[in-house]
Length: 418
Image 1: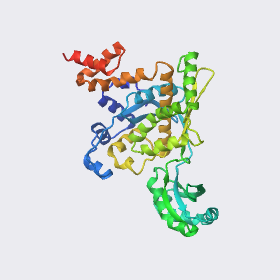
Image 2: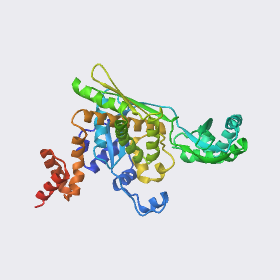
Image 3: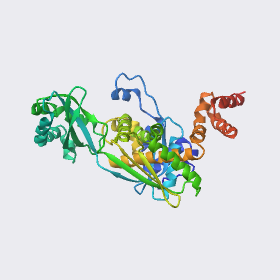
């Protein structure tokens, strides 16, 4: 089936879910979990501490996506209007040119073990390298299941860091976590090898924890956006002006990358992955060269097409954590019909690229607010006291006036209800 679903946004939630279910072969249990959101307080109480309730977040589906030659519908969990619509719209421009293509460096995570109180840190570094195989074996004893299926600790990287008080030795354990995000696995390994590292070096271990800068877990995605301005060279130039500012100006780069993360974080959240880890890793990667820069690149083709690329670390998984313990996230992830963390990461990166293209395109034409506020008008109508059966009428009237301020919408609601 095709991910190009005409007028998907005009369907009711139940009709949308029925189409998604047919596309993704969802079970009735999955459909019931997604539609009725049967995530109860008792389940939440098993996930975190001091639970008093739950906070539902809307889950939408982005259409028109083709990733690595496969049509896919993409679940996105977000409270922000226009995010899902923008991603879906951008994907249309890439669909006919083959969609999004991705590559992946592998599922390697780092755990850091900080060794302090060393009189000779470089000599201590040499001693650790001499015991490398023993350290890796000690790490892999902590997770024989991961090792049995092809993962586990594979290497050690050592760095001497000049701290505020002294030079310290930091051991990086490089671990292949396969289809798991891997935080628990690498943290357990770091804890386990700490006493041995103290014995080897004569120092004292302080920190032993993963790094969320997953620079050995890089995902790249590319797409050709087909002549988005119908040959209008002036608007195309405006698009590139908007992109260029993000490459040179810190203030614009922050907002540029935030727009990327609108899409990425939505899919990460929908699939039960760690949004904070992904955000931290992405922004750290953007600053890896000593200055904060864009995560995307855009280039022009002679025929008016736009070449887009994105590169960032994505430590996401399909096993472990909330990906399995959160029943709604587990059901929602089934929409993707994927079997590996690599597939998931490629889809997420593709959404980030689409989201960014859509934002710059909007800025180059009507501005970001026109489309955003039209979609946000439904929220404003509800805030103004509109009944459910009045909301669409309120939005239509506000659209005719061309004003989407709260005062305008409140006046419309009050007039309707007189």
